[in-house]
Length: 265
Image (cartoon, rainbow, N blue to C red; front, side, top):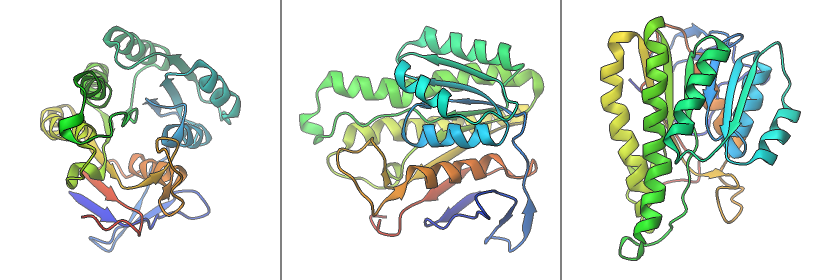
């Protein structure tokens, strides 16, 4: 199932209560995230930070990870806790053992995992393919492809016994259009896209949903220059939140959304 729309978000007073589906013209009751157990990577800045705040306001139990201890502490101070538990850790997602430990810790302390949101990512090697350094390429693959793979694999083990769960991988519209100068980023995200499509089929037998999110241009600290004509990180976070709140009998595979100004598709 493919659901595509351009920067038009379905909210009412900042809360998702109903979703109007343009592809079928019907209204679907949405689910609550209160007491849901959610693991979120890249939680200390940008989209991840806004999403963590929204999830806490929904009353979810959270496992949050990021790289910066200072940013994590600031985030914790800013969270509005509505009875939810919070597990946090800071580490580099290039370290496999840290990922394995964190997923196990989250599952143990939260009593299981209902959702995983692979949000952590970076674009640190903006160059033409002929000019990309091998170390830079390897680092981007480690963060954008290898790390979410490990998170998926370990979370899947935690979700299998409950025969239920959802994994959301945050990709990019770069996967859908060949932009010059971001070859390493495109390759790493496209690799995750392919892995997600395969895993979606493999996880189905265990009742586990696997969703791909393709945000277009977003104005976050991820960028070197401000882009007020792009989507805000809050708008992207709200869109991801909407995917978590769909009815249990709906499986959303791919969600593509862009700012109105973006036309390279």
